[in-house]
Length: 408
Ligand code: NAD
Ligand code: USQ
Image 1 (spheres, rainbow, N blue to C red):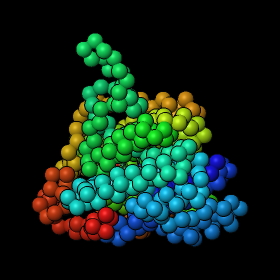
Image 2 (cartoon, rainbow, N blue to C red):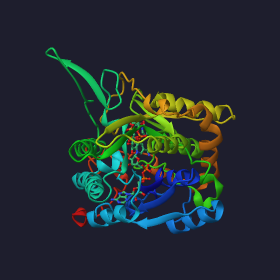
Image 3 (cartoon, protein in one colour):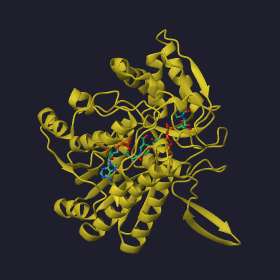
């Protein structure tokens, strides 16, 4: 198949492009490289050094003999997005290209607006581009498990059967997102669902859980093929952060009492899930939702796993409970379904298999690059990043902003 990967310079987009290329698909990698700029603005960096996109695709050709086309594209341009779809006539478009940090979206009104404009308008442009130039193309969109929040009932895969006043219907599952970033995904889902119904587009919304891991077999092939690894307070996700903190001898930063529970998956399963979605497209007009995670853990359980894995090698790890900078439930029911991708053939990796060999190993190799000042949270959900934060965060520099007006 011919597949465009949008957001191909990112943590997940690049390994996905490599995996699809390995599996024999014709891959076009596109990105506007904004994430590298956001890193500069936030004072953050990838723990693992990463090559530029031109260098990556050259190295991939040398290592694998396979070609990935590289296109610099900003989804904020409807004309450019439409032209890209028209030029390549893809069978599928995988859309990773969004501002994906919840803390970033909570810094200020301007950061919230930047996040929602970039994500919602970018996706809207893509939908119009598909209507115009690729109405048969399968849109595989990265959503998030955080769209659902933490309801006191089982979480279904996108839809729920409801009986109300003696009548029944199958309706979109209620959404209770807990950041302006997570809300941008809810808005995307609604827009995509509507365009499937209205224009007959076909789409899969992959409501993904929190991803961990240092890469895939393809990114391991050469240092210039590695993908980014974030461990800071803005972009780093829980498990990756805990591994970096432990390697540096910093206490693991569990927010609040640590009972908050989420779905998690290994990055090697992300690339396989995307491939499975592509290989099994929905019908024209169909909008389907897969919950994309493999195991669920509380934050305390994650921290305990990291401590136990290191203890097995004689290494001590301290766990600290910080005042929670987020507004989220810390003790709650959580049981999310995730059957569809298993039915399509996903054979998941478990956290147990991955932790020591891959994640902790990679972090140890680069631990000299760790900046410990990036461990403590700078953004508080109540106050943003604007000077009202309680100590110690108030001493920290708050990320600057890309001009929002440049987006319109
Ligand atoms: P990332 O920040 O590493 O990559 C996102 C990429 O998209 C970046 O390279 C960025 O430059 C690009 N991008 C952003 N806006 C763009 C635009 N307007 N035009 C073109 N390119 C643009 O993020 P990631 O961790 O690889 O996540 C990828 C996707 O998966 C996101 O949509 C995210 O919401 C979703 N997701 C990620 C996780 C996770 O744990 N990393 C979990 C669930 C869902
Ligand atoms: N947490 C800690 N300590 C930390 C970091 C996080 O206790 O040092 C807690 C958070 O409070 C939260 C949980 O861990 O309860 C997950 O936080 P996270 O930063 O790992 O993940 P999150 O902000 O939810 O976002 C990440 C990705 C996002 C994706 C989402 C999937 O950045 O793009 O959409 O995971 S999900 O959480 O399922 O919505």
